[in-house]
Every structure is written in structure tokens, then in C-alpha cells.
Length: 589
Image 1: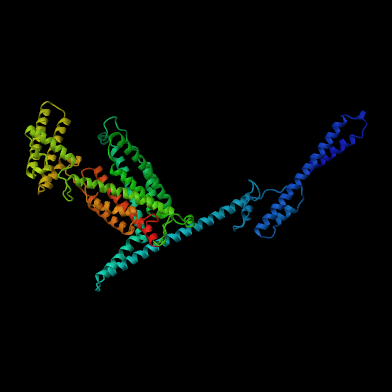
Image 2: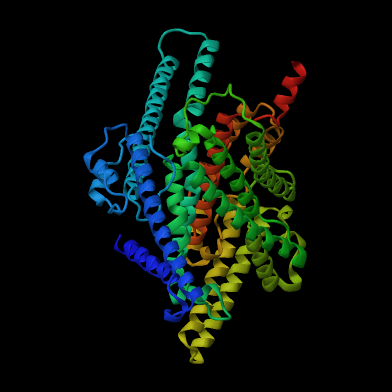
């Protein structure tokens, strides 16, 4: 205000100076005129800015009072009713927070930093975010309670159905079959079965983490590490941080039903990455060396299909996904047909699962054809044992070796005797070599190597005789093979890959890929896969020759469980639109 009065007095002085005669002026006429105009404009500009600022304060205060629907407080009335030349001070933060409304009705315009309503605006945002978090938590707990209640109801229904099946009251066979089928449907299509199926799928990834940690623990030992590589010297392995820090929590959360789209997607992305690396190495091996694809590639493809089924099963309506995306809903029945996108995911999962089953079945067909079409006659020797036995026979007999000694058609006695004779000759030669090395002053490793050669030769001969004779000497010979250290080369251990369960899986994978009678096909495949896992891949057994062989058996076991879990989820979801059942149903309609 003082500056405004000073500018007015200066402007009046220079206007009066224009009337003074020119000889008595100290400055020229244009200079007096310019100074007067500048002072007048400055004074007007200051007054306009003060008036505009007072008007803005008044409008903001009135808007704030209208939002709150409250009577005008005396502080605001005093501020806005005062002189227009006074500048309103900033409100203290405590007063701004106290003036913030509790409800959601507020302006969406964000005030500038430091403005009077800034603290109140962010306080309202915080209150609203807290309310939304409380609502989401309540919905999540309610949905989780519904899941547990549904699982408990399913379990009680299973108990009632089981009691009806074993009831002592007389009933016909058809009635008992009907009750048994109802019990099976309650077991493998209810909410409890879905949780178990998802847990079986996630157990495969937990086993992967355990295998990576086990490998790291073994190979961090320098002597063990040198056995696995010759040149260059192997470096100490790195700890599997990604496996432990990312893959394991995702698998456990997915198994518990928490954030299934997110955690299942992470498992699917990991499987896709590993399968891409493995596929590239397989392609390079096929192109360079002409080798055929291994069963490991088919397993990875099957796990892609299983992870796809987990993600597809967790996908629900967008509105429900926004509230709580982590739990599988229990109100989805088979009557609701999946959409086109979900049907495409189900088709991809079915085809990838069928790849593993078809590949394993074709491998078993080749084994059966190699032994003359015999389904139940196990091979007498493994390929490694056959090559070692043939080499021992050639070294023992030389030109005197008869053709029927090296062929199984020559009878059990001749081959067994030839194998035992070859083993004795190899042991004698190895003993002589060891004695010569000791007489020449050879170091201890040379003698140990000769002794290991003798033990391996005895194991080959004993294993051949026991396998061909199939008599009571099989167990002692297997024990002798294990005791001599030859079990490290898997001598005398039956090959679990050679099992006829795979033939049944190959037959059932055809209707699975076509989508014909999907529910019945999935149930049959689940039963066959579980039987194969228990009877052929018992990783808890004591007779596996080494820890990495047991780890390989464990991988097969959990792969069977994961594929069975994926088939249960596929059965609960239905096969979708792209199936033979759907095509035949449309034609019938």
C-alpha cells in the first residue's frame, strides 16, 4: 500500500513538471512524460494484482465451503471479509487435515504445491485408499472363507458317498457301480481335487529347486567337481539364487492358491525360457550329430501345457479378478463352457501333454520291437553291459569264440558260462596287472585302478549270469555288483524307462488330443500315470546306485504327478470348443 501511494506522488510531481517553463526544467519534457506514465502503470498493475488475488481467495474459500456442506467458519469469513490489500496467510497443516471431509465427495482438481487445500486433498486421498484396502481385504477373507467352506462341504459329501458305497444293506451291482461313480466324481471334480491338482503341479517346480540346491551342494566340493569335467578345470558353481528367491516362492504361493494368475504366469514364463534353451540345444545336436530328440524335451513341452492349464483355470471374469485375483472360485461348474481364448489355451495344453505321452509310448514300442515283440520279457543286459560282456568274451576266447556265445538264442547256459569265464579271465588279468604294478613300485592310484577294473569285470560277469539265469543267485550278484563299485555305472539296476504303462498312455493320448470323451480319458490317464510313478519311479528306494541317478528318478516321479494334476484341472475345466465332442454336439443339434 505504501508503494502504491509513493508511485502516485511521483507521477503527480512529473505531471506538474510538464507545466513549468522549459528553462527551469532539470530534465526534458519527454523524460517527465515517460516517468509519469511508468509510475501510473506500475501503481495500477499492483492494485489489479492485489484485487485478483483477493478474488481468487474468496472463490476458493466459497468452493471449499460448498464441498463440505458446512456453515462458514469465522476464520474464513474474517479472512475474506477483510481489506482487499491484505494477503491471506497459509493454513497450518493441522487445520487443513481437520477441515478435510471424511466422505468421497471432493473435487478431482489437484491443487498446486503449497496451496491452502493441498494438505487436505492428500489427506482425503489417503483416507479413500485406506478404505479401498480395507474393502479388498474383507472381500479376500470372505472369498477365502468360501473356498474353505466349499472344500469342507466337498469332504463331507465324499464321506457320505463312501459310506453309501460300503453300506451293508443289500444292493444290486448296478446300484453299487452308480454309487462308486458318484464317489469318483466327487473326488476328482470338487474344490478339494482342484487344490490337490494345483499342488501336484507346483511340486514339480519345488523339486526343480531342490535338485538345483542338491547339485550346488555336491559340486562345490572340488574333488567331486573334477570328476564331472576334465579340461578346462571346472569353476565352483554359483548358488541358484533365482531358483530359491523367485521360483520357490511362486510355486508355494500358487500351491496355496494366492495370486495364481501372477505366480502361475511366472512359472509358465520360466518353463518357456528353459524349454527354448533346451529346444535350441536339441536342434543343434540333431543338425550336427544326427541324434534324435530326448525324452527331456517332451517333458518340458508337457510342463508348458500343465502351466497353461493352471493359468487358464485361474482366469475368471474381469470384475472378480480386480477384487481378488489369487483364489480359484468354487462356483464354476462344468455347465459353463469356456470362451474362445480359454478354449485355445486348453487346446494347446492338451496337445503339449499328448506330445510327452506319445513320445514315451513310441520309445517303448521301439524297445518292444528290439526284443522281438516280447512285452513282459525284460532285457537280460543293459546296452552298456552287453558291450562290456562282448568285449570280455572276445578278449577271453579270441578266435575260439563261438557265434552262439554272443547271441541270446544260444541258450542260457552257454552265455552265462561264457560271461563267467570272461569275468574270471578279466579278474585274473587285472590281478596280474595290479601285482606287476606293485612289484614295479607303482603308486597306490594305479593299484586302485587295477582293482576297480577287476571289480567292474566281476560285476559284468556276475550280472550277466544272474540276469540270464534268473535264478536265486540274482540278489547276491546284484549285491556284489553294488559292493564292487560297478553300480556307479548303473550295472545290475533295472531300467525303469522300460515299462508297459507307457503303451497305455500312448493309446489314451489320442482321444485326449482329439477331445473325445475328455473326462473319461483324463481319469484313465491320471490312474495310469500315478501307477507308473509309484511302481516304476520310487525315488525313496535304497537300491539306486548314485545320488544323481536317484535325482533323475525323482524327476520322473514328480513329472508324472504334475501331468496328472494338469489332467485333473483339464477335466474340471472341460475341453472347450475345439474338441470332437463339441463338433459332434453341434452336428447333433
